[in-house]
Figure 1 (cartoon, rainbow, N blue to C red):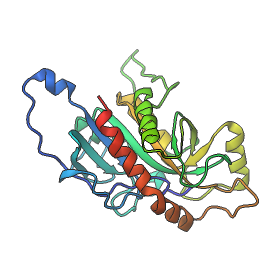
Figure 2 (figure 1 turned 90 degrees about the vertical axis):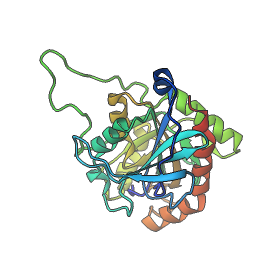
Figure 3 (figure 1 turned 135 degrees about the vertical axis):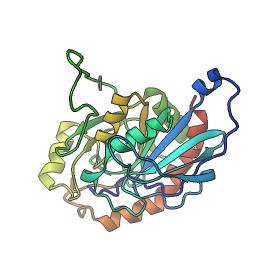
Figure 4 (figure 1 turned 30 degrees about the horizontal axis):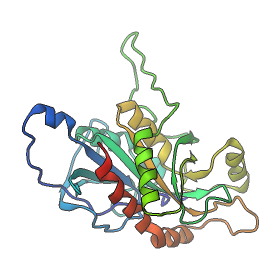
Length: 277
């Protein structure tokens, strides 16, 4: 599955916010992070844009952070593969990305991602509000912990990895916009950057996966481990290589379908983000 199966939010910004009047207001402030691949070119969804260069104890994130506002909500945008899509999926520093968002005060994360469909009913251009993942990656950091304190192991529950509250808001927003969407779906995340073989694609479907991409599982798991509610808007761009009567996926096909349907993702973000409390 192409690393482009993630919508890229390249335009970003920082807003000038009126300081809260007391600590209680500060504690209640919502700050939404949007993580994207390279599909949302110059979306112009933020106002008062400002670019912020940050670093973390895990290294630098994939891109500078762009902060701004959607409605009255403060938003931080991060390009998963870098602004020019130069970082292959296996080499994305997911720990630095999630840590940078945590350090920036983000209270929620909404990821955007392009995916390949493994089901006939999930057509090209459909949106899927993911509810489960299968992590088939093998070469990535999937935890912030490289060692535990004596007798204090950290094992994060992952039974429901995607935030129910954020998913509900995204589903409601899709309905309000009358967008074709699927209220749940299991994504299998593979290494890439190559696409699947037919045997692999069929195996993933037998495992119960509905869609496939190269990014969501490690990212979602790390967000859970660090305590940030996480949800994802997936857009189906192709059918991987699951069906013999359809040509196998190509990068060009992914790019074409995504660009044709990217406004659906932008509209959903604009509709959903002001609802997050």
